[in-house]
Image (tube, rainbow, N blue to C red; front, side):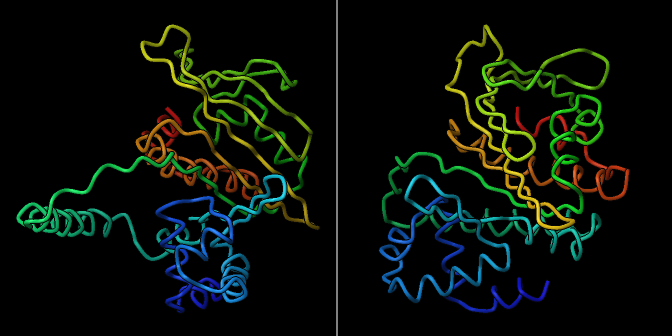
Length: 270
């Protein structure tokens, strides 16, 4: 935790995280322009955030895109904010937000125009004490995904093949379907998340990339979820992915899963 607290102690680095929270997946140039900051200074601060695992860099061709990684913040929440404190803190937050809403309503300034920017992608990084083969099997084996995800991921995992996200409650219901775009065992898997056939308003599918990078006896697992249709889905997966991946990590490292609220497991990617 020490690198995380050291990184968060600097106001400039907190400002960089705020800018990524507002618009994730920015290049160094974009961050410098928004903060009026020299490239060298921004690079130094970003390097510290990357070492603390608060920022993840994803390469797209020649570009390096910077994503806010909520993993360490989630770990801080799990460690110091117990299930007994959460309801009280949520009430306090709701009261504060409502007060801010009233203050904005009473102001004479006109309401801001809705944003027109596209919905940013989501990136989550976790480190697992396991082999790359074990992580790959956990992502693609129907029985294992049933244990940590609450759904069986069913496919032959060949590029171009279909896959299904089938409930493990015995109903046989399929919540998500998709296509395997890339499969390079045990390091890279790219799949689409699509609406069920016959949906009233079918959406363009979002795309999930699992990148498994082994290092000695641990694995760095990076999950990138892109092409999101709206902010509601972004909010949903922002709550869902940490729960799913924490359960995956627990299963591989301890042989057992964590207790999860049903909505976290069944609605993570609905």
